[in-house]
Length: 112
Length: 113
Image (cartoon, helix red, strand yellow):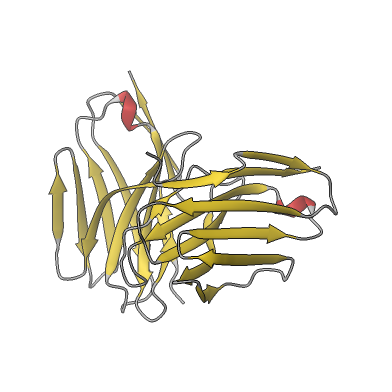
């Protein structure tokens, strides 16, 4: 089955700097890669996603890149703000079972 | 206008007890899920239902039994609670089984003493 790894596990950045979180997946058949943000005491919320036929996608300050050959995908947050502080999860969807496998999460702290 | 709601929000109970967590979604979605998030924040799928039919059943002890009375509700009953069951349980829903975007509830924080 699919296995998703995520790095780093914790990340601290100064407000205004960029943050990058990297993930790898194992199943070359996976074709959908969402990113979820989980704020303290809340459930995860989808912030951006990318499909395997696209190499990059942007939405204001966040962007996601996908390298299908290397089975890597990354989340980029520019001009970070304190409200970006949260746990971020990458995920990959197993096509055979319609199941989303989550990475272990990255705890991002943005220091004012 | 809560999209996915869960009750209770907190649940503290003794080992060996039986408890239930309820989930409701008002999005009109066909598919609902239960996830377990442990103390290290690992998020793992437990069950998935599509139109009241069980479609994903991960390696979960038989003490956990999901029930979907209709496609807007998915409840989770846990028998003979153990210390290791302490976690946050999230319900989620998606429009269809093959629809990727999942909407999560606020979670139920279960503590077994």
